Structures are given as structure tokens and as C-alpha cells.
Image (cartoon, rainbow, N blue to C red; front, side):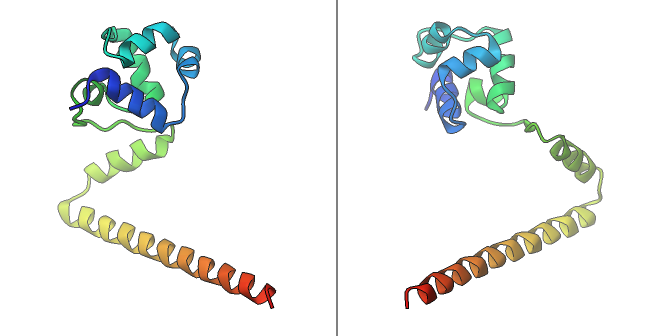
Length: 127
């Protein structure tokens, strides 16, 4: 099981952020962040809030490793979508999920066709 610091480090690296960037975005010093990530210190409440926003993860996940709450990205449309989805009936929710699955399937097929097309184009230029 990962510690709080390990989870913070994993998420920071997943997002491609350096400790210096975290310092610039949150005001948490690189030394303090290093101590947190190495398990030598626990983040203060204010630091957890700032890290949650910058790392796009819930405080709950940082503390426990379980993400019970949703944390929205900077795309505010996601929050709107989810709030509207929650207000639908179960039948409507299932219909929306079916539509999403259909859209994902089409996107995957389109991507596959584009890859195949570029392979054919590339092999045709070899002749």
C-alpha cells in the first residue's frame, strides 16, 4: 500500500510535473514537497487542498488511496455533464451510456481506418 507521499509523487509524475512546478503552482516549497513524498512529513490541510487542485485528484485519494469522490478537470463541461447525468432516470442513464459506447466504438473504428490508410499510403510510396 502506498503512503500519502508516494501517491502524491505518483500523481505528480503521471502529470509530468516537477517539484519546482508544484512549488510555483501551490507555494509548497520543494523541500517540503520532497519531505512529504519521501514520507518524512505529512502535508498540512492547506497543502492538501492546493495539491488536490494541481494534481487533479481528490484529497480522499491522497489520504487513503481510495477515490470515493469525483474530482473534475479544468474542463468545466465534465462537471455539467455529470450533474445533468445524475438528474436522469435510470432508463435515460442507460440510454446515454449506450450512446457513449457507440461513439467510442465509432471513434476506435475511425482511428483504425486512419492507421490502415496511412500504412497503405506509406507502403505505396515504397514502390
